[in-house]
Length: 253
Image (tube, rainbow, N blue to C red; front, side, top):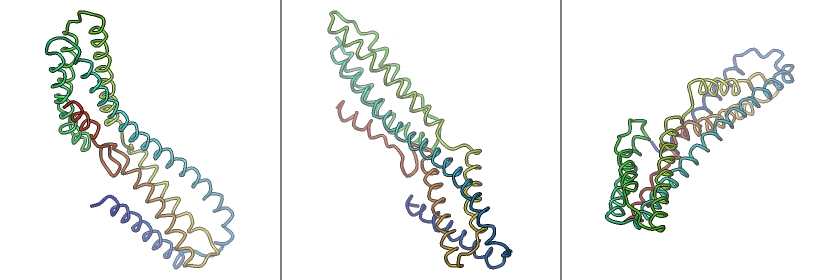
């Protein structure tokens, strides 16, 4: 199902459920002294709402930063791979062509084999690490007869190290992403309490009360849905795509 359609279903479902609960509470619940509870209920609602807003904001910002970092790291990894290949072109023998072939193969491995596994949480093949190590050994084995070739060899080695660091960051980030069960428990239970609290207030008409609780529930459901979609930066509605490595293949020829 489309991510936007699913989100609309989440929002409408939460709004309808909250409206039904609000109607039942107003229709069959204990109404005596409800108006007198407004001050006390308002203070509790403010505290609970403030704490819940801080928790939701913290989780959302952390996950959004994770998606942004994953996108930036993918371009850093691909750009460093291209730079290492270009630097290796100045080395003698067939080192440059060997590194270029391995770099293209590495980019295709990341885009076609690793990215689907990052999205579904499956185990990654060892092909990428092997190709990266072969590039490292090819550069290390190349001879440098002058300062220019020595400089290019060092540049290729440094860039390959950046590829390694970015790759390790990408894989570690994929494993560490997501919201833990304890955090989901706090988010869901806090949302339920936050949405149910307005039922303690008195003085509003039935229609106005139902609009208030349904709007509040819809907003909370929208935020929880955003958190759900942002859990994995390589899957969901805001997933990072392997465009950086597709562009790298095009640049390497």
